[in-house]
Length: 178
Image (cartoon, rainbow, N blue to C red; front, top):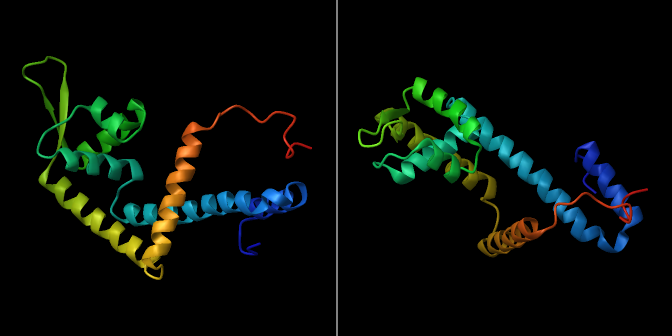
């Protein structure tokens, strides 16, 4: 057990050790991956914050960059960044106000708004992408290619399992419920 792990994680690992020792390695791995993903995400979000971006703002800029120079609707943007439209609306207002994206009304379809990157938005997304890729490179520099491939395959398998898993609440038959 990692003595520097947060107390809730240490507690969960102890519970697993005592109640499900045969499953401990697998469950501990999932819990550790959760911890690592949070640490990495915080690191990357801190870098975005230096540029005045939230993770949603960055996702919106990257999505718009993907379609650039073609504009897209706010609904399409929400779909592509997997975010509720209300959250996207707040993010868009910030990005429009800061001059990174522009809103244009569709002359052919009344009431339809389209979004596109501005020159400043293109520059910001390029700067943010470089910053994040450099940070990811530094974080993973010590890992051999075959380890990266194995971890990537593991992540794919865990994601697929999570998407397929039943999201019902634990029953009282769970070995984790006292």
